[in-house]
Length: 365
Ligand SMILES: [Zn+2]
Image (tube, rainbow, N blue to C red; front, side):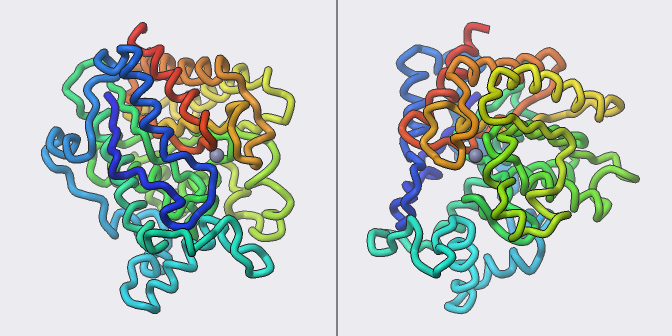
């Protein structure tokens, strides 16, 4: 099953943001799957947009402010929701910070407001709608009436850098944790795995899991738990020197995830064995509690043709990206764990290829 909603895809250039994020990534994947005949075949069919998904699920509650406050700092969320010029200023600052649009000298950085056709603050409402997509994908994976495989791929989402009290790394709020915690309080899931394959460490997710445990929302006396695995570049953003001075130790990006695998530059041949080892550790961590959902953060920026300079320390071939995704897919299928996949990072004109070619293999088993 695929969740694909063109209304949730807006070119960043519409907001004056000049990042190599192609709005064509998801449509290219759909076109490719359609032309190869894979789209009309299980497990990729049907393809839902958000409206169709809501109808199918019997109109689930939409993402609301309470869902955001459940995982993020309340003051931060209040800033995002404040109406009026002063509130818009706080939201504007949060967006400028999240998308790194002002450099250390106070000058615009990859930001050209004169070319914008939409106010930057409108990005917040789009972002909340995209969080809704992640939640719907999880619901579809959990509740779809098709017995096997319980699988939904959402062509969006993956805001894994969003931290407790601020956005970071192009991620304003953390869709993964917002969706996961909402599913738990609605009694739809108890134990959830987050498997993060993006080139950059899922630092916001690690922080939010940690803080949720400290608050007593997860683990300890509760049956609810979220275990997270992240396999990523061992160095570079967000683990670079610059962040070492900006963020105090004990906060993101330094908070250790449950299973953390850093791949050094040039050590791509260790990627698959390390991922396999990491999955075994993840399974051991939750051996008394079989997860009832896995959320896979399927970033394509480890791909050797990715165009974002900060992902250049990891260069997986297309074959390795496909092998990576198939390993995760089969691992979860063999254990009967429903999985919701979200697209996450991927930059430049070829960012669609790892996700598209992996999906293309699924109808063949
Ligand atoms: Zn990334």
